[in-house]
Amino acid sequence: MFLKMPLTNRKSSIVYWLPNENHKRYSLYLNITNRCCNNCYFCFRKFKDGIREFTLRLRRDPSFREIVGELQKVLRRKDWSEIVFCGFGEPLERMDCVLEVTRWIKKYSEKAVRVDTNGQGYLLNSGEEVAMKLKSAGVDKLSVSLNGHDKATYNQVCKPEFEYAFERVLEFIEEAKKADLETEITAVTIPEVDIPKVRELSERIGVGFRVRAYIPCFW
Image (spheres, rainbow, N blue to C red):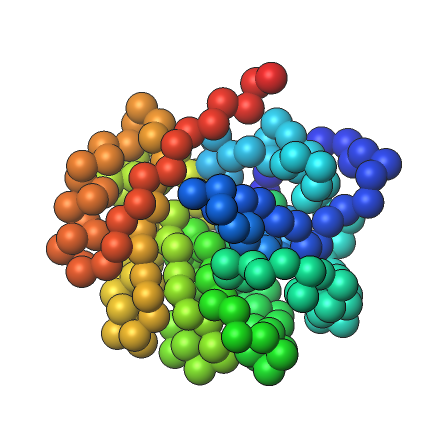
């Protein structure tokens, strides 16, 4: 759950775009749900309705047809660097939708598909071979947010609904690597998180690591 804020009158964005890190190209983002099993204290959605000109607070989860309809409007507008499942919620709350939309993207585009996730896909989809299904559908890359170098810190920062969230995130990363998905761990630069220790975790598992700058939301 998260702090609810009143919706603006602006139309909610299912599809939005932002410049990538070198600002030379844009990535295309898919905002498919506002549900999340974490309640991170620093989360952007606690303080804002969206980013730039895009309103990401949804009134309801969009259907497959609605997502594809919005994609069709913009898919050929630019040479997008990639297509990313990332919005105001955890994409794997709707794993079946992620799989279906990814298959559609791969049918009509050669763009790489990335899923930004909190890594709790196995807790959200009990009994499912999550990593293998993502790979089979055509997902190319996973970016797993791990804002805690140990369980105590993770629970303090992310306030997960699930008791064993930290352990299952690490398991998810291991399974993603086994499934031959390009995988990176990310961590936000907040005081509680020991960045070098999270980097050590990524090195031990054998996946990439990226630091994400904390952006204060009090403006």
